[in-house]
Every structure is written in structure tokens, then in C-alpha cells.
Image (cartoon, rainbow, N blue to C red; front, top):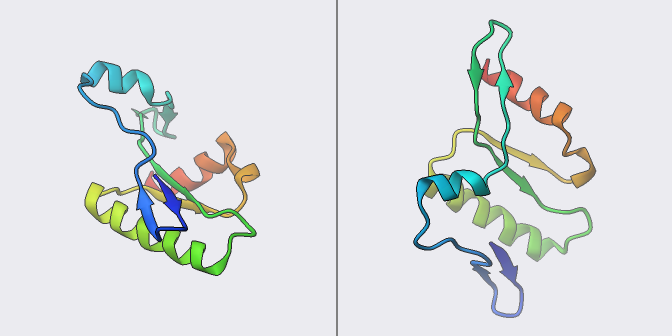
Length: 100
């Protein structure tokens, strides 16, 4: 999704239609997480980024859209960052450590 500031709307930028579960799985990035006890999981996370330098009204729209999306999709692993340079595997592992 993205923000259309002129219309003050959150709009869908890309959507998959008539896609099988296998095709959807292929579209998602692979991430294998090995727990300390040897268990393996493949976590699906929602990572929200509101870039530094956004106007306050954009930040408010981003925050409002995030809350609604998280509630609608019933996400359980939601992480936020203001700096996309922080999005590393180490950053994600540190965030996921809470769910061990």
C-alpha cells in the first residue's frame, strides 16, 4: 500500500489475484529461523517503515493505516523502523528473539 497525499487516502499499490498458495509462497522471501533449542520456524513478519523526513500529516496517515492493517490481517509479529538501513538479518533476529 502507499499514501496518496492529494486524495488523503491509503491506496493499494500491488495486489495478487488468482494466485495459488504455492505461487504466493514463492513471492514471499524465504527466512528460516533456528531457535536456540533447535526448533525451526519460518516467521511471517510485518515490518512498518515511516521514513525519516516525512511530513507530520504523512506520518499520521502511515500510523493510522498501519493500525488498521495489523488489526485486519491479525498480524502477531509487527516491527517498526524509521531507518531502512537498519533492516538487516541481525536486526530481524534481535526482534524475533522476543518470540523464542
